[in-house]
Length: 135
Image (cartoon, rainbow, N blue to C red; front, side, top):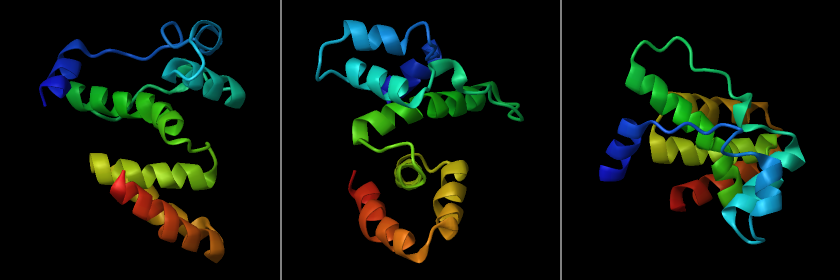
């Protein structure tokens, strides 16, 4: 898309300077994404600078795409109301797989459910996978 090409050209980075959780909670109005993101990050003790740099990727553009993918991960938690729990992460991995097609998302979405108890795995497949297909 034109928007995607613009992002690749500008290569914006999400840092704690621009996404300061305390400042977002203080300065953004209730009901806004900024306030919700600040509350999510603060509640869970996350920081926008916590993401480790992308390694083992020689292509500069692909490395940026992977960095961006990792940086917006917490945005998706906020937008979809998914907690950073095993179940919330797996639901989000299914969304990421369907909407990005990235191999990392496929590996997580397809292999990690085997670590769940059968009842939780059934809930994931009956509730969250269909949600990810529709989102």
